[in-house]
Image (cartoon, rainbow, N blue to C red; front, side, top):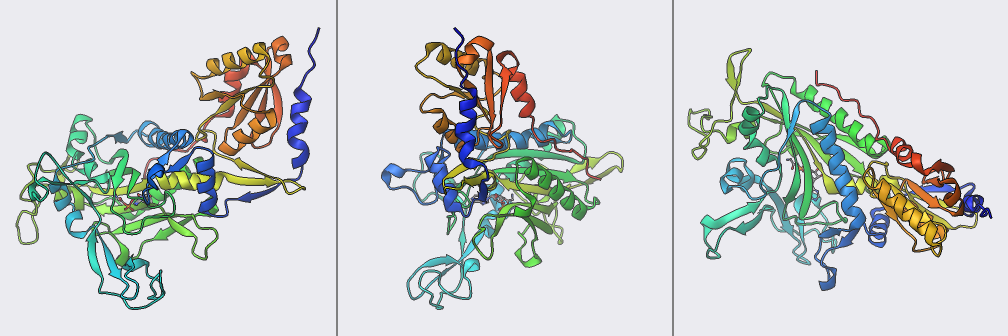
Length: 487
Ligand code: GAP
């Protein structure tokens, strides 16, 4: 006998109460902290020992989201373009790298202590000359605090200065010291870039705001090497535009991004121009913006400072320890020079947070019931398709659903879930951003077809199992980014 179709029942249980939904975006970071913990994106680190201020662990869904962001970045820069190579350098480098890069001398935060309550703050974060803790205006003189995290290498005495090493505060230096290795082995001519993604560490004085400012974080940095006579400022603009495109491909709304031309007095010691791309991390505040990434013209500072032949204005070698010269011979002009660098430097964690905030939406129905829908771009969604059996006590349906999950796995990340009623399962997948739910019902056993439900529209369509992988892949196609050459 023919089984009754449950198709129409599924459709109506999910749409009837949400006919005219009101969408609300993430009102603040705390909303994301709560979702992230509840649904397995990000957990406070070392929680069983009371936590460790500013450290966070990525859970089963968070690790997928952050990997998808890093993969999108790598594909876009290293694979889709023809002018960028990738590397993965060490986190701990020779200490001399940090001496000559200027970090030992200048990678400082300026600290002040409140004489009233002894609270310690960054001088540049004091607003209206008032202590953020007690409101008093009586501070000590500002003093520098180097924010590189130190460690010691080998079995040495605690106070042996020769054993001091640093955990890198930026991935960039690992690129500069490998400039010649990459250029010669890959037979590159200018302009070309080197990309690297990995952990960096800073002993931040005031970490906070979830994964926005932590002492251990991940960066995606690219150093783009060009001639000293190139139009550097135009190239900064070019990379700003390229990154705006990439952020759009990740689903970030343009109105949540803001370009900040860093004024001269705020520029890092190596930079002649920097544009920060800011994100609206604090929609509830009068000043909602915080840096998502920066694009800097680093001049020839880094390659020349690490080179043995570079002389200062008095004709003295600026680096008496280097054994290499990181200059470049330009065949067409027969000239040797230190290339200039345009550096787009982005944070993985800040991108994860921006993506979660932009994707967050709440649907509320007439009765005031609220559902969270995470409208992640399909390429970033931790799970692309959830395969749900309509009846978990029917072995044939369960078997068919599990077989579909296994068959999809080689082409896209799919999960099987039977831990609740269909309404609950849909709600859970909406909340973690799964673009498609695939329901196997009684009719599926007969017609070899399943119901595919769209996360954003909640529309459903019947698709043959044989066509399912192709159908989903077509709808999961990433946003196309136009790759253009710098002019
Ligand atoms: N190589 C240049 C450089 O490191 P930066 O502006 O200091 O520049 C680049 O860092 C990006 O790294 C920032 O825009 C931010 O996204 C991320 N970042 C920096 N410090 C961070 C921290 N303490 N926690 C999380 N992300 C951080």
